[in-house]
View (cartoon, rainbow, N blue to C red):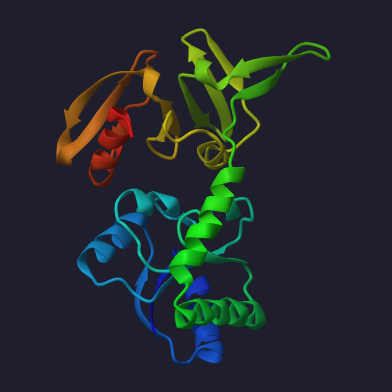
Length: 253
């Protein structure tokens, strides 16, 4: 079986290669990719492998962005240091979720599961049923509780938020030019728990609502510059590789 590794840490690549040589010597690693951009380009130009081993946090963003650019029709075994993305992983053909540091026994079990599903010929049906079950359990966040003075907590409806941004390690939710709130979540966590039909992760700093967007400018190298109704000091650019994804999201699913 042919496999590709999507991982940006060289030590992790070496470790995974060594473990696969030990527990699955029949597996042939045909590519090592370390970014969203490189992964999308490779998957567009090559036949689908038998399996993908995929880290989630890559040098240029979350690996889940890859699925917005290409259709991946093979099983995925996620390898990550974070445990909060398991639900999302199983919604995109993930068959196992291995937490780093990965040991030989857990990798062997993941490979055995892969081979069982493939040999039985039921992988697609089982994955479809698993995804359906997980999707039924999914609930997107609709409100935050914001600490106030003393012992007060105030509700903030997600629909009120124009955008979320991070500055100096702190995430804030912006309601208008005079009102913003500290949010005790990372942007990655917010991306996972908010309805993707309403919010788009423009880059590592900004998570935008559709209602916040005033207009767009065509930018150099086929990028887009997003202008918000509540202006920011930063220029918010949509990279060339994500322009089609952004346009699809903005025009509605």
